[in-house]
Image 1 (tube, rainbow, N blue to C red):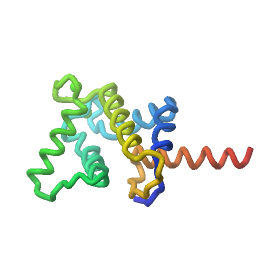
Image 2 (image 1 turned 180 degrees about the vertical axis):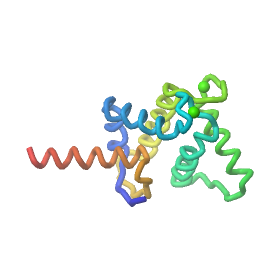
Image 3 (image 1 turned 120 degrees about the vertical axis):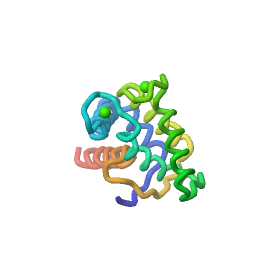
Length: 141
Ligand SMILES: [Ca+2]
Ligand SMILES: [Ca+2]
């Protein structure tokens, strides 16, 4: 976990960088797909859903610690990913929904930087790292 300064522009430029974005989506997918069948089941998605819930909480959606409430939130997040409702998430669904969520987030954030606590392996952290590396190379060239 680390505290990073983030704005909508950083997220959008990460998504628009198809190579960087697709690469990290594929990495994340492979990491979550513990039985390597090319699909994410609900138990496999739990880790991702947990980090998404943290992000939702950041945006002021009050998720109470009631386990029933939490599992309802996870259920509905899972359904958002599972676009054809066949009970599992393929890479295409995972990428499409991740992208949609990040675009939403970017729009919510706008261009006013905010501080967020980010997981080391989250997409947002990757977006920040990418931006940082870009700035570094701008300075050195
Ligand atoms: Ca799997
Ligand atoms: Ca599906």
